[in-house]
Image (tube, rainbow, N blue to C red; front, side, top):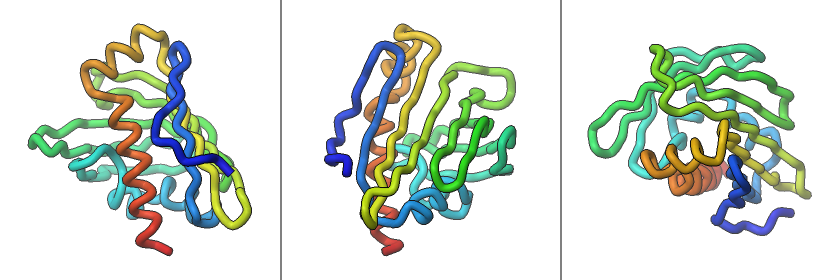
Length: 160
């Protein structure tokens, strides 16, 4: 079982978040793969989510808007590159889906059975250390990732 520590591991161009959730692996995977679930927890504190379309399959696209607490809308597009239920979801962030690629990274979401619960490993891989630093400075990406995982935990508690 992963010891819950809200501090990510930062190595060069990678950020890794580790968290244990007291839910079965199938449920942990499901809340990452259904837009109905995602709309309940996705994103940092204060954000809400609108899914425009979602094709949860290898090569499929998820087109969505994150509505910030400041009233700003952040368009996002993700391409799922490799999915193996219930073990992992890999995806590439494609920017806003309209040509602007201000944020470009790969994510690996790994689910591991741990007794009756699930270890979750979320790894974000940026093209370079400098790009990670830029995105973190501009958008608060590392703190946002911590809040993202915490919001997942809060949502999972409501499903138990």
